[in-house]
Image (cartoon, rainbow, N blue to C red; front, side, top):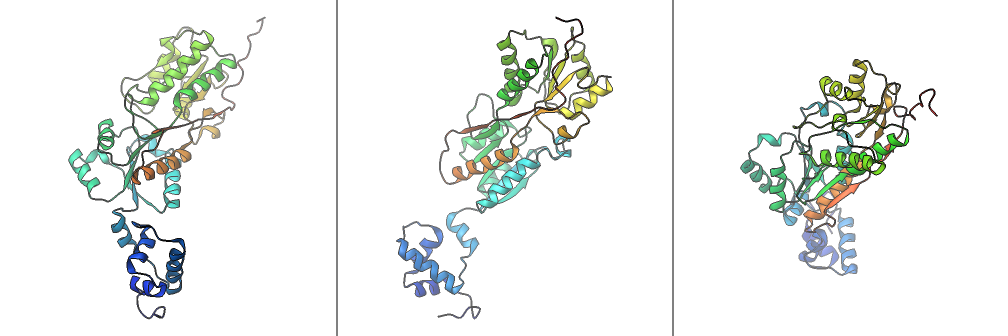
Length: 349
C-alpha cells in the first residue's frame, strides 16, 4: 500500500486498493457513464479516503466538458443605478446559490463592447457553462439569440414582451396594483404615476397594475397624472415631476420606482411628505426606510431571485427544460409613514 506523502496517489492505486478496475473508479468519480453497485461504490470511496486520493478537478471538468463556472452579465455598471448597493442583493443570492452547488461566478460588466460574433466566440470557448443576465440595458436581440441557440441563459428581473424564455422576475403588475389600492384605501383619489419606458416589460406591467386598481374602484384614468418616458431613463427630472404636479386637480399621492430621488425633488419644489402629498415606492431602495419620513415601499425579493436564477440555469446546463420557464415572485408592500390615512377636511360630513 502506498504511504501517504511518499508519492502522488494515482487512480490505479485506488483501483488496486478497492479490488476493482480503473474504469470503475472513474465511473464513481465522474458519476457515470455506467452505474456502479452501491457496495462497490462504497468500497471505492473508502479506498480514496484511506489513500487520501483527490481527483484532479481539471480532469473532471474535461470529462464533463464543463467549466463549473457561471457567467454573470451585469450591464450598466457605469450608470447611476450602480452608485448604490441596489444590485448587491441580487449578486449575493447568485453567489450564495452558486457556491452551494460548487460553481464559481465570472463577472462580465461590458457586454456592449463585444460585437455579436465576438460574444458568440467567447461562449464557444467554454469559459462558462451558462449565463445569468441582469440589467435592463442588455440588448433584447442578444438575449433572444442566446435562447435561439439554446445556450443556458436566464434573464433576471425582467422579461422580453412578446417572447417566452427562461426568466425570473418580480410580480410588477400585482405590486403596482397593491400600492395603488393601498393609497385608495387610505383616502387618496388623485394618484400620480411616474413610470418607466414601455419598451421594458416592467414598465408595461406596473402601468397595467395601476390602471387595474383605478378601474376596480371606478376612478378614471387621467393622463395628466401619468408620466411615461418614451425612452429609457434613470431618475425623473425636476421638470417631469413639476409637470405632473400641475395636473388639475393636482395629485394627492405619488407612485414612483425612484423613491429617494423623487422625495428630494418634491422637497425642492416646496412640498412636504406626507403633509402635502403621500409617496409610495414601487421599488424599494436601501435608503427608503432611513429617510426622515420612512417611505412606504414595495420590496423586491432580490436575494431570492438570484438564487432562483442559479437553480434554473443549472437545470438548463444539465439538459433539462424547466417548467414553468418564467418564475414570478411576489413583492410585499411595506407600509411606513409616507402614506398615512388622508386627513378629512374640516367641515366634511
